[in-house]
Image 1 (cartoon, rainbow, N blue to C red):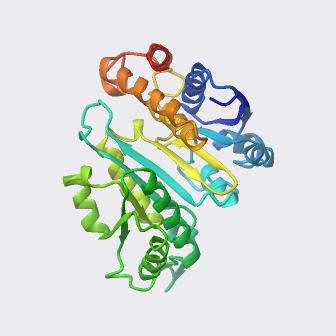
Image 2: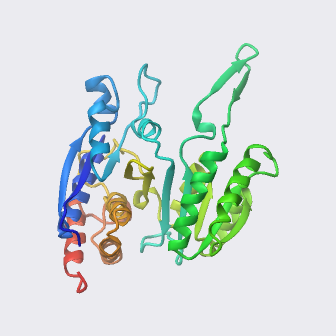
Length: 341
């Protein structure tokens, strides 16, 4: 273990973010690793206070620390002038080009045994450049889908390196049979990147066939890489294979910064009741430690979470009655009682 403290930015955000981020912080502190935590603001509540969802001071703190743990952010149901979603802004501002979403079996209802895969989603372009126009007096809408060789090569390279650390298998997910120019360019770049990684078994899978195979045989997948929209959709599908968004962690990773966050939203209906399930945030914190090189500690956190999910106590979303703090207490106890810890 390092003796130099890890500097971590904590952004609670909105809603249950104020409950699950402190829970994850407690678990991190229980590992015995040295941390310096720096608190920052972002989200809808921040916009209401300052007129921006991400103050410049928050960006500066993210860039000055080793990694960031983000809770959850609310987006208004109606368009609000001047508002831009916090995490989308940070992805663009910091060029967090790799959205990484593991889907790993945990002992919860509905999870498919043997599932252990990672969706790597290109995070900066595709349809999410948000370039839309109306024609024919508002009766025709056209959206630009931007795919570049550079961004495609970059995300493929990230996924290939990840596959080398795992089981050595990579699925290139595409729709080049219908979109031969844009997805064809994505495939060209990914194939070029794959030449530098001869130990990785690469296969090309059309996105709709991939969706069916994920449902039928998720155990046969290791790492999957794809453009932005496909990754947005399939990563929610894979979360469903392992229990839902409530236990799904994720990372937004670039060359200058990395932000880890649960996939779930801010859950305003239960915010302030202290019954939110902190599993996804705790697992996101474990992902963050893995990213920082503390892989053994990350695995021990995952093992502690699995022990509590299997034996209880569980939060109400998983059929139990535990509060957020009671669940977190149990994870910390399981972590500290680990004979290898």
